[in-house]
Length: 317
Image 1 (tube, rainbow, N blue to C red):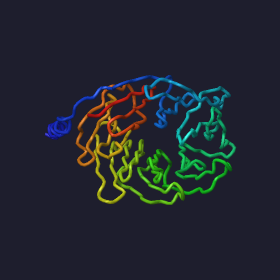
Image 2 (image 1 turned 30 degrees about the vertical axis):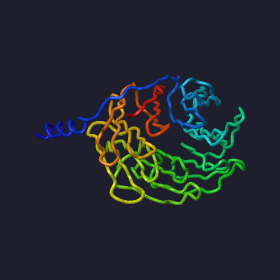
Image 3 (image 1 turned 90 degrees about the horizontal axis):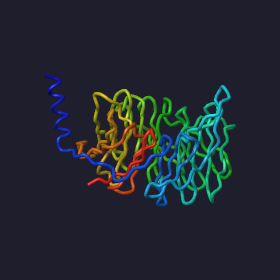
Image 4 (image 1 turned 45 degrees about the vertical axis):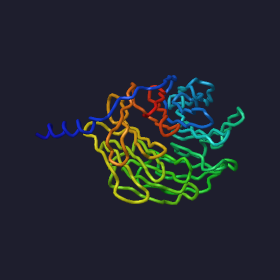
């Protein structure tokens, strides 16, 4: 009887969802770890020691390379580019270095400059512009660092959560930064002061795999509890969807907050759900591996990037 009820529930949940195929697609020879849309271009952080820049037709126009790094045996390997960000003509990216440390770079006028060296011994995993002169970095220790890019020094270092860092996202206005950790906590902070604004806990109860913030909503997907959570910074109870079979590995919110898009299945189909009811309205069908990133051009047009380098463009009805 329980299996029958679950089947009927899932059938109702899916009954009115229609499948959407990609408008356009390309493939790069690396995993997509992060992505930013700016200046009519697509900036992709990869695991191949490079930021790949594509035009709006998804043709590769440029690769910004960094050095390979040595492992404990002295073998050279490609470095992960953990994150990428763009402000004006400046490209900010955080790269893996030896011994688990990270290095921060700014690319401008076809020149790449290292602005934070591994000698600072920061176990950083993500970095975003606060403004043209400052960046915020997330450390594995669940700490945040406000960093002066020009002076190359730490301005503020503050604790975000109580566990280990797992995910970070910044809203388009750069007014809010959200951090998720291994314990399932979701923390919203002011990136200019690193002061906590909101703490969401006891909803996602395991490692946060993906975050997306679009004021006033925060979407979070987690691992062992296989849960999608939609938080409202203005108050009210969180909305949740729990998948019985697979973790929620990627999330996104349309700019108008009409839809939350998430991945939660082994077929790598992305679901487009109404944020009011979490009812699935559409399915994005076409990826062949885990999707790491969802980014929006506007309310209808979006790009997604996968672990095997697929970058697909979609249009919602």
